[in-house]
Amino acid sequence: MAVETVEIYWLPFSELLSFDIRILIPFLNRLEQNTFHSFKAFSKQREFLLGRVLLKSIISAKLRVCPKQIQFKKNKFGKLLLDEELHPVNNISFNLSHSNSILACAVMNGNDIGVDVEEIQFRYLNLMSKVFTQEETEYVLSFNNDARAHAFFEIWTKKEAYVKAIGHGLSIPLKSFSVPFGSQRYVGNDWGYYTINVYNNSLLTVAFRIQNNVSYKYQVKRLNLTDFLTVMEEPTSK
Image 1 (cartoon, one colour):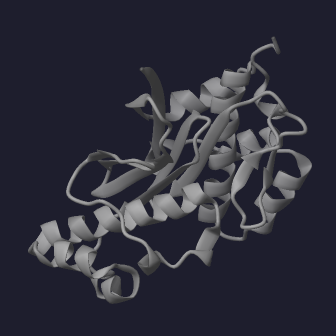
Image 2 (tube, one colour; image 1 turned 90 degrees about the horizontal axis):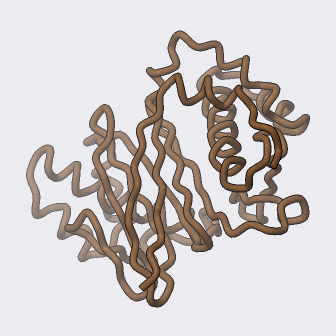
């Protein structure tokens, strides 16, 4: 049986407090730079710039080109994809997510993939009736206190990751489908899910489409400032 690796990268923004992110702007193309400068809030600029640079670093290593050569496009729902006209020979699927404190990226070969990272908070529990099925709601309510908030975000991140993997944006109501719950790893007939606790009381989930006769392993890497400094040392195209 073939084995595929689901690669998960996550970066606490606190790792870069002493780093001037503007140094990374040259890794953006002109359109991306315009988008970067259109954001007025530093937090939005940071999310956009670091997300693009992280993706370009990971994908360029796989395609054996320089990070600046990686070009993206979006589908009609806004999902970020590789531009197949410029990168016709590739089998790479990827997705980005961020919270107030974390940037996350998931990458694998071929399959649709989505990732969501959220800080666990109590204030969203009142949304359950609008976004969860009855079974999902009952699962969350079977817990008390902190465990209840954790259960809520277990389901929430799975739903968000699934919708992002499908690539149809908010056109799919979260209450219109159910996700498996109660396990860190799940591989069903069509979809797999992997959920982990990460930095600062946060939960990260990856959802990916299953292939027949394939097993999956998970590679998780926490990034730091050194990883971004390495990006700046562009390799020679091969």
